[in-house]
Image (cartoon, rainbow, N blue to C red):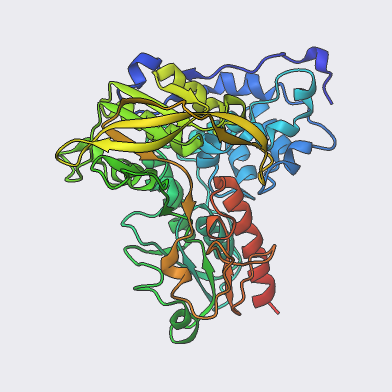
Length: 466
């Protein structure tokens, strides 16, 4: 094990686009490590005998092992190590909240800056792709059993990747015309390029996973029919939690009011930012207000800037300390010119004679006692209302369970919020049906959904192998 006094105290910086330039394009913001930069950062790893970083990863990537490969310049082997437990490293290296997971457990972080594990994972995945070093691992012999995966988000893709290697015949059903789920329609191009997602999907295709696109679970795909007439041995439900949510305030029916789901789907998957080349119109507000403080709010605000907004405000009812978004996303948004109105909440929206949004009225908040989430509850300050110009309002205040599947599957137990009830291994109330990701937990992170998918796949295999 290396000694801390011999370690570079700060992380190897990652180059980024200039904020003034990137605020007007959809190209990726961080530019990644060079091989030399990656090896310099990898050399900071202490190679602990008890690597706590692994315990912080929901899919238990063998972190010290892959970093040691980077340190000695064996980037292809590093990629193989990661893919033993993570089929989507290029995605995770970009969007996972490493600062709250693996990096938060890094022993080096107790005295110095923790190892930039996420940046190294991204580098390894990109190097493998760019140098055509992808290897197809050996699969178990075909066992003649078919698995259906409903939804091609991170949970579904993880189940598909794990089960295909175990010898199952896997078909993924996806409602949209591109596989990837929230990775495609929810996360903007400047944070997660669509080509990266499709490359990961193509890797699964090369493994043998079949994708049935434009197939809506609960409509064109019937779960009971899959298990009976279609001959599938098991079904995994990974349909996400994409039901839009709005605040119950006057004016949400005005033109120019979007849910973050619709706004980001139009822009990301349906390429509204390339209108009229792509026939997907979207309101291009001049004065934009985004309500919420999570990563989705940051994505919506930064997208609005790139679509030509003069001003973009994020309105959040708590203080900066409680912001749930990744620190990096908040930092990037501020650099690009997004304004943060903290301790404020909208109370009404006003429109013009044509029913189009014109202004928003907010009220100031203060923090009271902690609520069920453990955070201090925001309380309105009487008489603190203020109004400002706004012609595009985007609500990023959470989502609800996708009801198309849950309400169409007879006998599927749901909780009071409409999410699927499943045990720690993803088993539902229906024999042969597993579920995982946001449709079980509510909105969470990509890697948490992948962790749920990994557990479900292992349990599914255990049951079907009896």
